[in-house]
Amino acid sequence: MKPVKVGLLGLGTVGTGVVRIVQGHQEDLQSQVGSPLSIAKILVKDRDKTRNIPIDKSKLTEDPWEIVRDPEIDVIVEVMGGILQTKEVILEALERGKHVVTANKDLMALHGPEILAKAQERGCDVLYEASVAGGIPIIRTLIEGFSSDRITKIMGIVNGTTNYILTKMSQEGAAYGDVLKEAQALGYAEADPTSDVEGLDAARKMTILATLGFRANISLEDVSAKGISTVTQEDIRFAKQLGYEVKLLGIAERQDDFISVGVQPTLVKRSHPLASVNGVYNAVYVHGEAVGETMFYGPGAGEMPTATSVVADLVAVVKNMKLGVNGRQGLLSYKVKKLKTDEQIASKFFLLLHVDDRAGVLAQIANVFSACDVSIESVMQPSTPDQSGAELIIITHDANKAAMKRV
Image (cartoon, rainbow, N blue to C red; front, side):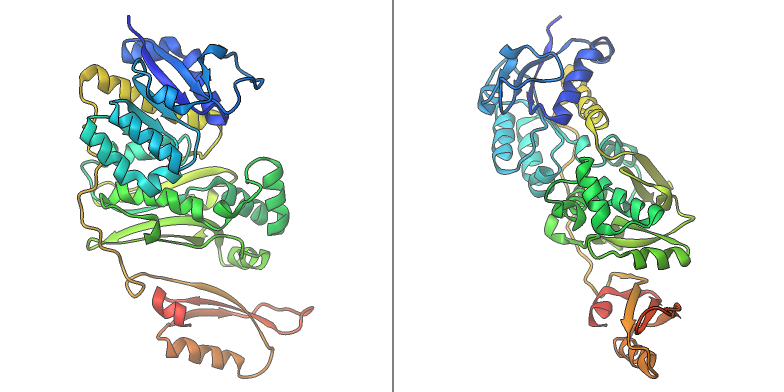
């Protein structure tokens, strides 16, 4: 029985997991696809590096083009990261009729439409389940599970690093800077954590989810992103007093065909399932007109959870090869993108203000809100006996984003 030959681009954390699964689950995989799966060549940075899995060194190469241009290789699995060169490699692989599985959220968020168009032109598959939420099969769910429904909202915790930091701040009362250092020491956060803590990583993932869920080409520039670097212990403490947890949420909504996508720290009621998603776990909530509310929960990163999603995509590609239906997954967007303006995006807002403790301050603040046409729902002034000045907690009624910017 002729094996399906795979070229693996990258042998880092996820690539190592892919090798483990393909080697260790060969009998199960073969029973699903009807032929052996063989990792024929692997791209590495250093062929002589010592590795913690047995690898035939003759399969290793430091040249990606050697893999892409090998006529024997049927499927390219890309887990090396990067954008510009990776895009060139994948486009050439598709041009040569090879199918692609990738875990690269940055690439798909920025260049997904171009890559998917090339795949359709060449009759190839491009699957990218592992690019969002690690081991949670959310992309396949949006494409297949909701194919008969109309999605109106996608909301979730899609970045494990920030969720870990906020969980520690909430449960242990730790300061943001201290927890960030701990997350870096544990390998959850990069040496430069900007992408995670400023919401950029989550914004890329929401770009992918919104594009699939709403069938419109959402670009990264369409996603407003605010991270957690300004969230303080005070914010979390007062949110708790009000019955909320602070989570970094990605929220994509569609109303009357107008779409908004954003990432921001959000107060989540303790009774909502997302409030109890802690540590590095992810959860995505999807609302469909027919099905109503659904939620998907699981590990958002890690060697084996992410590798499981990659290999599941590989299995899907090989099944399509056997059936002769590659390139027909219908992932191209067909709806005209209509974005909400700031005047159309509305929610309640939480503000924590440090003010002078004197008569008339609250009235002045209320006048500002009134002048900007924002209605205040409630005001709290916690006791601050050890501080000069006072703290005011203001929660608004639903207000549009433009009005709150004026405030």
